[in-house]
Length: 589
Image 1 (cartoon, rainbow, N blue to C red):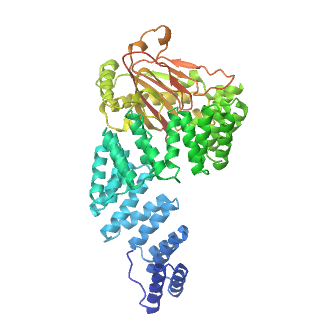
Image 2: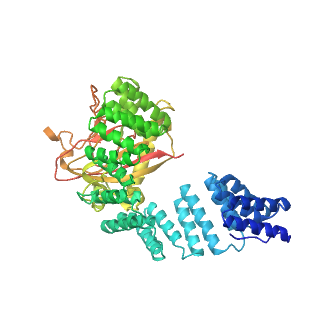
Image 3: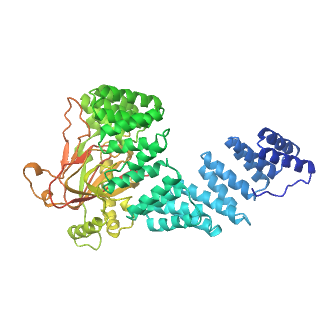
């Protein structure tokens, strides 16, 4: 730590400070605290002693007291840069991000801050900007930090992570490569490099990077998850092999088993999923997620007594998590207990009123119980709206624009099959957020999409006011995109019925359609590829779960609807694919 000049030449005070520092270094924290306290009793205005006491308080886990000590040091010596940095760190931990930023700004304005400390301050400021959603600003701040400390590998790594999140994977990869060249050999460094390689379509190199992460941390959960998902997308039938190896290598760890169970559940391999979750719960019986996953798998196997017992246990372990209540309610519906399911789903909605899956599950329970509140929740005529978009500027018509857009999107669909944890069957889906990747034609389309979203929100404003409704109650003219992607379905392809748990408004824009969808098709191809609303992904005994509304696809058409509304598509048979773009929107806070 940078130490200021002691304002007092008293040798007794200098001796007490030295005793305190030596005692702390020896692990005698009580003796160190006593020495610092005695020094401050004799002379309170000693910035160095306050800072040393702050270090000690932090080591003891007394974060608020440590922050107060650093604040005292700064009041005595405002240009004490190290104390300002340490105070900013602790303010962030205490949830006072704005004050932390002000503290750093003041420190950075100070004269002659050592380059290493300046780089640390800028690194912390970039973290604060990142947490505030100011990603571009965070990148710029890290570049200033690198100007002060160009050889600091962690700064290159952090910059790479931010560039990846900004959909700039080539720049991100260069930053990660630089970090590795400077000696950063941590598991996270290799994992994040793998993400950039994957975004660039260099899948086999990404597998190598993920395996490098696992070589340094065999239970690195994110690397295990992404390597399995990538192997699935590449069409590898043995996509769980790395998970099995990690399980065998660490008999006490449930990490790989839990990931395996979750992916197998999404792959609809329920028996294998149940087995993985049973092993995971044996290794980590107190983790609600594994018990909850076991309940979901058992319910799909129609082993309802065991499933409901697992769900009750998961709720006991995590009573404040909406997800455990949602799973419990879903299994109760499948077991033919809609009244109890409604009570449980109401709890989920209370715990997280923005969770669209909670609302969708409650709506199903109301429907199964004959509760008219379901019509309040889902008004299919008013809440599903279709917009035929005009061509972007410079295009004569939407037909020629969509033809060009389809060619551009086709180049992005390189996977052998859809992601294991998505709703596609017999198709592929693009990586990352397509709206953030700088594709020129997609950017042109975004202008027309934004106009349609504004029209949809204005339409919501015309509906009766109801602050309790998950769609109407959140209506706001200010909004942002969250996820965005392109889907390509081939013959026999479809989307399973689902909702978008963290959205508000969801969508489908039709870029290119096979002939079977553009003409009246008889027999098995009637309504081929249409989007259907109102049918869930489960069966409920004695309940009519047929679609409440269906929309025929049309090239150039955007369909907008509530994220909490069940939707899926009907399969089709044709030699040409069905190509779409979809996204979710949420209000700006």
